[in-house]
Image (cartoon, rainbow, N blue to C red):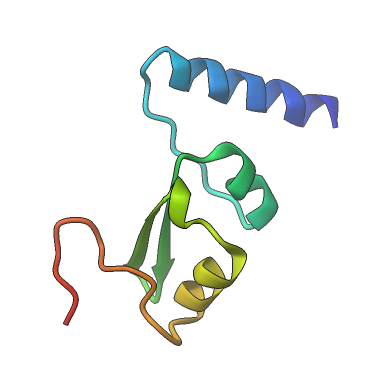
Length: 79
């Protein structure tokens, strides 16, 4: 657990310094805790681009399953 805490601290420090940090994880709890934005992909395409205030397990899992669009990718209108 100590190694993860160190990694989280480094990610937080880089973000506070104004750097963009890309985190890929299959651990949803981890993403909800450390990310400011989550982009969900399904079948090789972006299906949701969620700011922190829209985070939720159900929203993310529904988008990942492709059962319902959670949000249009940034810069594109939904149809």
